[in-house]
Length: 241
Length: 353
Image (cartoon, rainbow over all chains, first blue to last red; front, side, top):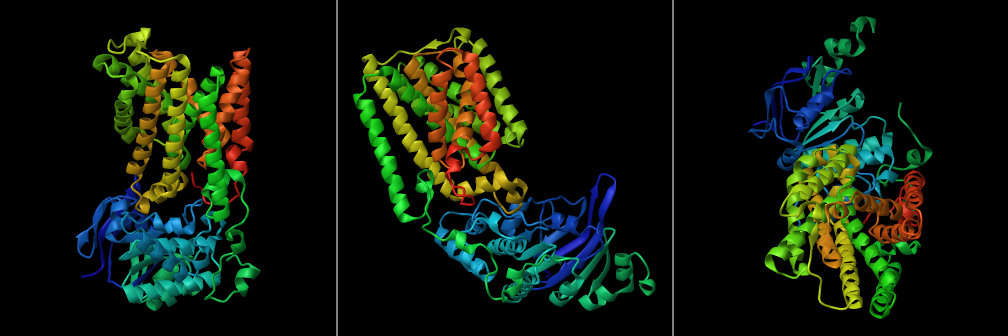
């Protein structure tokens, strides 16, 4: 059974059709890279998958359980976590509190504390657990957000533009940690990015969205060199590009 | 294009890449207002010493003073300390500006008057009812009202105060516009003034410690997350409705209990004086002037604003005083957003109440 099954997913905002019958599935322990031109519905899909938007139609299942229409705070307990295009860490909280606030229950404070410290260490922010988040750079905020997503013991992590505007050093850490957790904990990642070459090296599978539909899917190398995909990106046939 | 800095580029992958680490070294000197929230041991001890000495002086003052006017002013200051602390949980940590503390204060005062007159209990013994009724009321109105954000929530709390005041003015059980009398305690004027001073002093200490603990708890982090980015907080699994409502209920319950003591102290309450907008406003002004990002702020703010009221408003010209306070509020909101206590806090330290 696939980790995530998306069937005929559609999302309309008034008259604007943003997602139009998207169908795909991903197994556990797979990084699915999602590319597509601006306005192709990538971020909307992330927002639908994590419950921020209700789909207009279609179904989403996690390990065979329907999750479409559920609110984000339920989904996060079911194992769907995410990061944002512009990092949304809580600026006046320390990094440790940023991680701890997503954990529920009071009985395991000490365990959660040590888990949070380990995760910060894991993403290279170990020395800054008591620093307030507003003092971090943009890239560090992305790392902190990633650690926060892992703090929820996720099955599926949705990452919207994790590599946009960050330094290659941080990008390298982020990619390595995504790969590691994907392989060792069988976390499934959906990574939306415009950094196609990075995404090709990170991903196991690729999906290209255009105008709210799946334009191509398959092996990263194949999708990224698909003529239709290149045309969608560049707005012109490959030959003339 | 990616942004690059020399510092980042020079570091190898395995090393932490955060900048400005030295600023978080422990043990740096912090000033007295912040000492109770710092992790540094010597400063923490100093803070507690200051706190306990201050408390000791207040106790000595309450026991020995013969100036009843000063004692009553002290009682009023402490009443606002309690109200402002209670307010600061939802509004300081959570960022939901509550302009309706008088609503819960008034409901508490009237609960005391009604329960005491029907049951024959001494007014202070209705303490729990005076806390419970506004708390339940807050739980009921909180769920819809807290769906509104920013100014809209503030407006709802303000308008609800007016509405309930109108209701109390026309209802028979509250004796309408005539107000209600409460049987005073049978003791000398000085003894009774001392009792109320100590009730509010004990209340201030208790609520301060509770609020301080809340600020340090998961609950406090959740409120701060709601203040900073409520949508993200919800997406990351914070039960936002529950957290906001609990904070609202806490403030309402405490305000109701304060209303009980107020009613017992004055032994006469009437709609315009209990559901008074100036009470709600005083709390907001005290919080802004004192600073509501630390639990020390309300202590400072209540003292500063009540002394200012005493100096300006009660003395000669009411309008002059109100204008002065208004100007003060604008100046603080514009130039000293962290309040008096905030001035002494290091920038970038964790926001604990």
